Image (cartoon, rainbow over all chains, first blue to last red; front, side, top):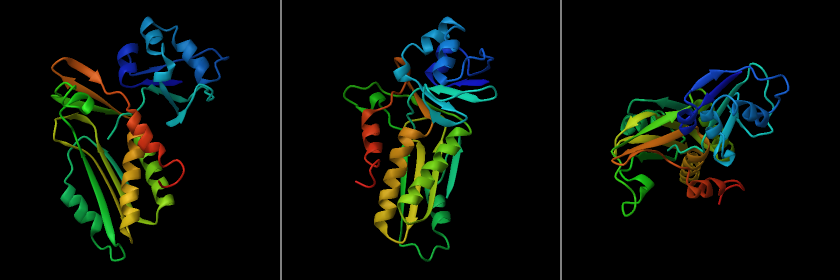
Amino acid sequence: MKVLYFAWLKAKTGVGEEDVAPPAEVATVGQLVAFLKTRSPGHAAAFEVMSTVRVAVNQDYGNLDTPVKAGDEVAFFPPVTGG
Amino acid sequence: MAVRVQREDFDPGAELERFSSGKTSVGGICLFVGLVRDYAGHDPASGAAVNAMTLEHYPGMTERQLEAIEAEARQRWPLDDTLVIHRFGRLEPGERIVLVAASSAHRDAAFEACRFLMDWLKTKAPFWKVEHTPEGDAWVEAKQSDDAAASRWDKGTP
């Protein structure tokens, strides 16, 4: 599973992109976040306030209940500020 | 219908010329250009001066989202054509950052679609601004006013 981080989530985790192999029971974004938080203190800090984190699964917006599986591209980022 | 996400500047005059050429059934084109402002928080009274900003985006998803926003606009209004150009990378105050354009047989549809394209772009397209100020770098937080502007369109046109 490819996980991408943008803006301050990239700064906090220290990575822009990583390949992860979560346990088989990880089936939703929420469960994936719980798994990712164990990877480093930076990851834990990035996901500390989930109300400030948005997610996309395979480049479409999702939420904590969105299903994830091996091979998916999951991105985490703050609310957008384009334009 | 076209979307371009690019580092380099664009020429609004040339884009308008290309966008309007050969269109005989179009009554009007609305074209909006957004510029980089020089104050963090966009309030000269309380914000710090901004030396520059850097726009980050999500290659692939950005284009997909912009195309979806364009498609939504074309469902809502009888548009002849649409164009969205958004820059990324480092930009200085005064530089052009975004262009949206809509053409239609009638001006109202073009005006409204342009507003809609900008409102949705600001809340749905995956771009993030980090402002470089004398006090340091700061990620720009999403504004409630942008969310409010975008939600106006939730129940059709205002």
